Every structure is written in structure tokens, then in C-alpha cells.
Length: 287
Image 1 (cartoon, rainbow, N blue to C red):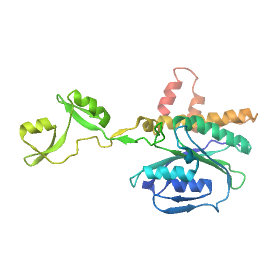
Image 2: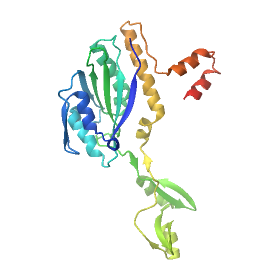
Image 3: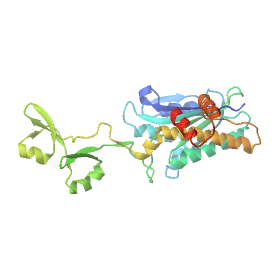
Image 4: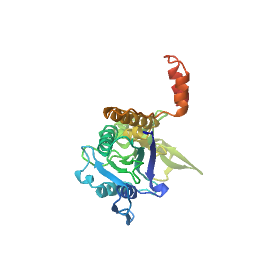
């Protein structure tokens, strides 16, 4: 019987995981992690049915080799708590044969992840012949058109003009500076330390403490990363998976369907009149 299951996780160093290890596990392969010097060997693991790496057009072709791909990811992340990858585990309909499930995954991954610019590594597992499921491992850092990594977050400087404070990235500040915006630095004012613009500090004769401009705590998130990380996007992926499965079941003339909505939400919808006035209120309350 077809069931709905889609589990989303983040692979991060902060939780003691690595993207290389996650890829080696799901592909039942042996991969060496250049970042920490650990070789992850899952060649004795059973149940692998199929595996594939899918890339957007701007990604280097050599990344079709998962060892090259995930070591490039590991190398791009410098901190001990870096987010390395996004992982989904989805249940596959037992009613579908191997080729149909492969096609289902390829189409879903292409439309929902690769077309958005992510590199995708996926594998189908079925250890006992009764639990077909897939692991999908995705990059979380966007790519430039030349195949280099974009930033996840960018430093945002808090600048002052006529008493107004506003944030600018380094590239934005070049134009903002021409309009009179100034960065703020820490200065020693008696026993206190205050943020001032260089022009204001010069008038008071204050001594600058360091060379670091005032900035926002977390910087400005890459808008592409922000979309990928949003709750709205996750909800859309969940709905799209159910839709993709149901279309494949119908294509194979199988009388079955799955639903991504919770049991509680389905019960609420079924117990309410299907009017334009009612449905939006239910969705808003349950969201």
C-alpha cells in the first residue's frame, strides 16, 4: 500500500555529521573525506537498488563523481558548525516497479531541486524487498554561472547618514558612500567605547580602537539560500512529492494515492463546508 513519508534533515558539522559520510552511506560506497582525513566505507552495506548524481548546467561536470562533489562541498565550508547538505528520505510506492520509481525520483528531483540550482545525489534502498525508499542529498550553497560557490551570508555594514542607520553589503556601500553614507567604528570616549563615523569622531578628537566596522550580527542571507531554507519552500516540496507520486500511480493505472497533509488537517477539511469563506481560515489556523 502506498504511504506518504518525507523526512527532511540538515547535515551539519555541528551535529557531528559530514556530507561525504552521508553520501557514502546512501550509495554503499567508499569515499575519502579530504576535510578531516576520514575514509567512510559502506561497501558491505546491503539493499542498494540504484544511485545517481544529478547536476544543474552550471556545475562542474566532474561533480558527477560524488566523491568530487561532496569534497568540494566540505572544502567550501570553513566553520566547525557549517551546514553541509540537506537530506530527504522518502517512501517509494511498493506498487511501482524499479524503473517507475527511478523515473519518479528523477523527474521530482529535476523539477524541485536541480532546476533551482542544487546538485542532487540520490539512492534507492530496499533491504528486505518490502520497504523501498530513497535518500536524496542536496547542496545548500548556491552556484554562480561559472560553477563557483556563492556566499550563504554576506557581511552587512551598519552605516549612518543624517542620523539614519541602514545596512549595506560591501558592493552596495560603494554607491552608498557616494551618497554620503559612512561606516561606523568603535572609538574610545573617555572610559566608554562608542560607535561613530570617522568624520564625527574626528570632530571630537576620539581615538579609534579597531578596524572593524559596525555590522549586523548574522549578516545578510543570500536570497536564494533564504528561499531554499524557508518553511514555505519545505511545505511546497512536501506537496509536490505527493503530487508526483499520485501522477505516477495514475500513469501506471494503479488505484492508490497518498496525501501529504496531516490526519488532523484532513479531518478538519472533511468536517467543514467547502466554501471559499471557510477553507482559507482552516489553512491559516493549521499552518
